[in-house]
Length: 114
Image 1 (cartoon, one colour):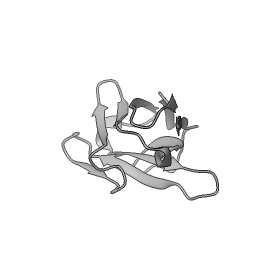
Image 2 (spheres, rainbow, N blue to C red; image 1 turned 90 degrees about the vertical axis):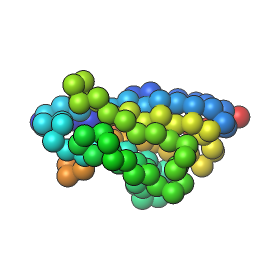
Image 3 (cartoon, rainbow, N blue to C red; image 1 turned 180 degrees about the vertical axis):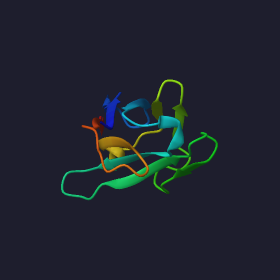
């Protein structure tokens, strides 16, 4: 079945960086755009970034534009989110998914705090 496993989260100080990874299985990875989302308790999950099937076209939420970089490795069935200049408001659980999938992984917690 379709699965997404996120990793790489942790505690980081403001201004720091983290690189999230997502390993996908159960579908033809190279045929789908991939997305990252994040969610704070009590709020709806929000879009963070999208990368098309080829890895050439990328989109970002305004709140992360210029700080986050999405990438993918189709041979390894993985998607990445490089997060730089992190801010406290980036604190959330981060999830990845294929664009047309209704399945979610367990997410990875990112906490930005002194």
